[in-house]
Structure formats: structure tokens, C-alpha cells
Amino acid sequence: MSHSHSRAVRPAQLLALLLAFLSVSSLMGVVAAGMLVPVAGPTALAAKSVPSLFNELPGDLQTVAPAEESQLLDSSGGVIAHFYDKQRIVVPSANIADVMKKAIVAIEDKRFYEHNGVDATGIARALVTNLGESGRQGASTITQQYVRNSLAERGYLEGDAEQVSAATEQTTERKLREIKYALALEKTQSKEEILTGYLNIAPFGPITYGVEAASQRYFSKSASELNYLEAALLAGLVQSPVQYDPLTHPEAAQERRDTVLATMLDQGVITQKEYDEGIATSVDSMLHPTVSSEGCSGADSSKAYFCDYVLSQFLEDPAFGATRIERERLLKTQGITIRTTLDTAKQDAAYAALTNAIPVGDASGLNDALVSLDPRTGKVLAMAQNTTYGIEAGQTMSNY
Image 1: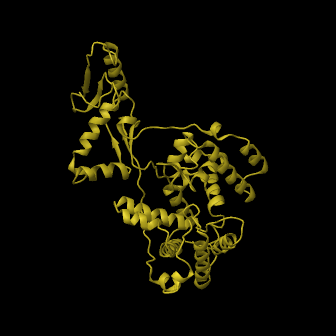
Image 2: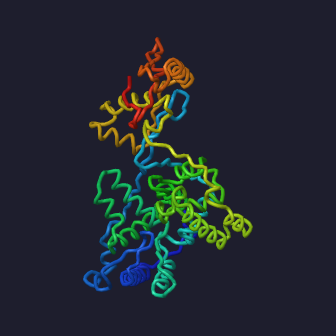
């Protein structure tokens, strides 16, 4: 793997800059986008030198495959339901628009292709900024953010709350560990691999993780189809996914998007014409959201009871885990695909026949249900009833 564009950073220079940066950040109480690390002050590092602490930390980060949503499909491959704790769909680099990659680099780490995991220039710049009156600034590179997210994700997947906390704790040791991992990671992964990993693991909303899920949630399209304006909006979300959520805070999202557009213009990613047209476009007019519920509650009403039936079978099968908790965790984190025998045409016909005979919520109080099997194989082709699946008044989760 080639790193011909990487700029070597002398450890002594880097650690000296970092020590100064941490000290100033501590004195100013700096916390920006979760990227700065307050410490107790310069004297806190006196008992143990930074180089000594740095050398004692582990440096062999093994990145994890992040939690990914699972899908329940009908016989033709149509999606019936999604199962997740974190809404994420992992995609390869080829399925992410180039302008999305350029937008995230522009706003998060403009020297990404020049440094070797840690940006000494960025640390120095942040130090000067934090000493002055021009604001507060972080210095984490995309590689460092990828490390941080990977460590937190590993803790989440292992059910280790302490590990999750350690990945984001505001300590000097955490920052140094993150830097050492970042330097090591750049020796084993290419820039493209790191950037793709970051875009798949980073948060883009309250429960939306990774650029593909974000693209589908906000624009109902694949990340490969994003235009420059959509890419700018998504790139702005990672700094504060809840604060800048365009569905709930469109004004804040628009202000942040325009900041990203200005950065993209400054770095030659977009033209002046594109910038002018972009900032004149409201966020509301850009959005074409797909907002669906997790699990069988998010399934089409005619297929929800079949979904419930399959889910019950899955959660009771020891082949998918020793306990029900393990099976549910597998379903919600490992991105599995459950292919079923449900025939959508037959399912729609069955549901129509039932509800035409006795409408949903009929005053008679009568209910009807139907299951259609293939007599040769026993496969379930259709399963329907004339009730609405759910827990609200007038609904039921009882599968007849």
C-alpha cells in the first residue's frame, strides 16, 4: 500500500504540540464536537511524561464490522421489515458518490490525503485558535474519528458499557491512545479504506448510522446517487447528528449545510455557481424522507402478521443463539437477510378477500384469518387477517 502523499510527523514534534494543545484546551475548558480533551492542567502530565505514557499504550487496533440492520424479505426479494438498534447499511466505496467523499474530507479533515493519521498542522492551528479570541477548534482527523467510532462500536457489540465510555472519555490517555491507533491504522489500511470505513460507521442522525442509511432516510436514494448539495447536508451532520437533524431542525441543518458548501467552494470541490445555487435552496425542498418503524410494526399492514410469525420462529430457534437475548442481538446487529416463502400477489389477494368479507373494525366484531400453504412443500404462501397490527386502541398483535 502506497502512502506517497503522507507527511511524516516526528513523534517529539507531535507530542510537544499535543501536550501544549491539551494544556491550553484544559485551561479554556474546550469541548468542541467531542473532539477535544480537557485535562487537569499542565501539572497533570508532570508525574508521567507524555512520551512515556504514549509508548506504554497499545497500538494494534482491530477495526470491527459495525452493527448493521437485518432484513426480512418476501419470495421475490421485496423487503417486508427491517430490524435494528442502529439503522445502518454497510456499502463498499464504489457505492458512495465521489462528491460525498469530497464533502466529508472538506469539512472534517482537509489534509486527510496529506497526513499519516494525525495532523500536526491541524493541532498547531487549533492551539493558536484556542489561545486567541477567534473561537475554539478541534484537531481530530478522519482517521482519529474512525478509531474513536470503531472502539465505541466494539464496546457496543460486546455489550461493554465501560468500553464505550472509554472510547469517548475526556482524558489525556484516551486522546493519546486514539493518536497511536490512528498512526498504526494508516500503515495497514489505505486512505480509501479508512474513508469508506468512516462513512459506514459515523452517526448521521439520532439512530441513523452510515452514509447509505442516511441517504435513504433523508433522500430516499442510494449514497451512490447523491448530488453535491445532498452530500453537503449529510457531511454537516456528523458534527452533531441530533442538533443538525434536518427533519427536526431544518434551520440549523441549513446553516450547517451552508458552512460545508463554503468549505467545499474554498477547496475547489464546487464552483461559485454551484455554491450560489446551493445556498439559495432550502433544506425542506431537498428532503424526500423515508421514515419507517423498526420491526414488524414497520411492515405493511397486510404483511405484519406474517412478519410476526417469522420473527417468533426465529427468536425461538437455538440455531441462532443459545438464548433469546443472543438471537435478538444477532438479528439487530449482524445484518442478516431472512428470505421467506411469502408470495406478495397471493398475500395481497388473501388480505383483500378477508377485508372485503369483513372490513377491518367491522361493527359486528367478527374477525377472519387465512393461511395459504403450498401442498407439495408446506411453504407458507400467504397469511392474513382482518385486523390492524399494533398496540394502539383498536389494534392487536395477536396472530390468529
